[in-house]
Image 1 (cartoon, rainbow, N blue to C red):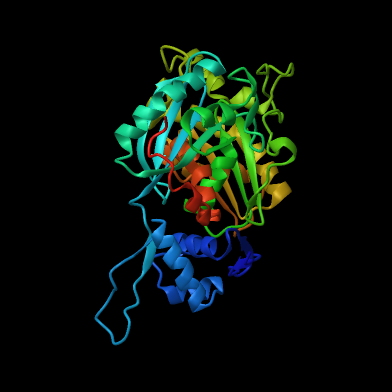
Image 2: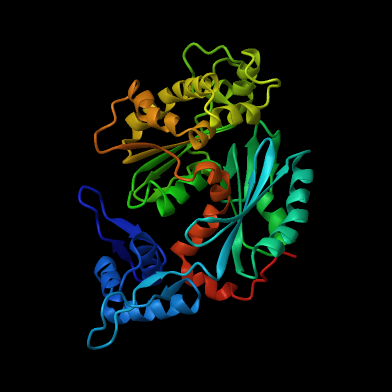
Length: 404
């Protein structure tokens, strides 16, 4: 297989590109398109003949398309710009959270085409039955006949992507659930199972704040708190996919009990459930329900915003530790308050800087996808696979457009 290296950005190491020449061409157009074939050749180091060959293949697969030429007509063969073709394919995503299941469809640029939510109820068998039952109607109603590239399934906790198993999800009470096998048999789609922090890291690299970066840390703060680490452009998994397990880091001053038997663990202290209980105790919401507090923050309620800022302040030492240990180019924090209240995003860098000293070139930022965050995370693994190994789609062209 042809081994390629993306051109280095000044000050950054060269980044390997998977998928041979076709993968290099597709990811280059995603990052910088629309681009002429000549520009693609300069960016990838491929010969004109190789660019032409791979471009023809990718157009045939419905992944790239030619646009009308820009500017006045010129002598010779027109230089038609290439762009990602979002008309033919979709990624299906399912995010399994504590309060709800989010179903989504994403186009090839990671944009949410459709999203639906259902309450999560019952144990793993009931939840996966809900997923199997709802997916056919969801995709039939919302895909508009476009081809489905695969099914991404994302959740928190300890997710072993290699075996397709949710090893442990404390808030859900799941242990050793073979999610990939159970859903692949029912949907007849390739299933990409991963933890939500790693999935979001892949999405940020492709479509968000991590575009062009090779060193990134993704911190996820929800009912589960975990991190994903990207180095050399590769998302680290660790043994049995347990890298990034930071939920039991101590929070100074916290006395919140944790199921592990200790008090003051990060996940127990800043979880959505704990935050909702604090809001209820303060009289901000009539019931300890996180969505009620989130709606107040979205409306600009000062007391609700202070509670979310306190949540970020408690998570900031963990973010600072990750910066000190890993020295990433980008630290991305995914947290619900940041998605609905831009003023909190403006405070994020300062809160982290109280515990660490990010270098001027380091970006500390909220996640790129706003309230679509979980929907994007769900399908990110499917899109990452398509961009890394696009020619694998040649063997999947007969996949039905809806699961069975």
